[in-house]
Image 1 (cartoon, chains in turn yellow, orange):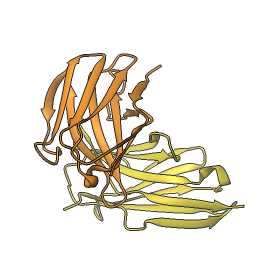
Image 2 (cartoon, rainbow over the protein chains, first blue to last red):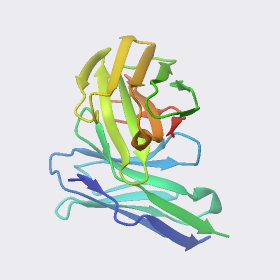
Image 3 (cartoon, chains in turn green, brown):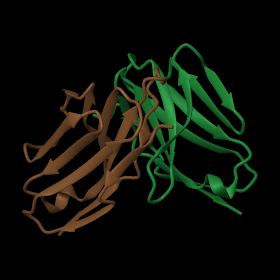
Length: 110
Length: 115
């Protein structure tokens, strides 16, 4: 029933290594995809986005990849830092509203 | 800068009581959204407004939930009567006119605990 799925509830990586967070979606009508980051006791904040007409978007240490044929996107963080420890939500634009996944909790160990 | 003020930040109440959560957008926007976060379901959209008009309330779980937006600077989400399964963090978010592709600005949330 969930249109946006994040199948890994948690991920743990070492500082300096790459973090890869995955997201799958079912609705081919989604035209824009976003990643949000959430710290405890705060609201989610926008991190990076990608249009459905692209397959890659990069912003500093963060890169989002989109594979439309597989209905899959991923967020790469390189290098990972302890301050990146947070819950990451994948979202899809439908188009007037955003549909979110359940989130993946990333822990970056020093 | 865009911003959203939510109150209360924390609410503890007993089952059967009425709960009112408030949201004050403090800068220009054209859409306002209410989301609920739980461990089981993640971030669920409850309802959203365009220009103060409710557009889609299909995410509102039951008739016990209602939302209003009397003007561009204020919205409420009411639960009457509340139940323990309503315990969650409730977020208000706005989409500003300057962002055309769906980026939302979230408030810090209202954590509701129903005993």
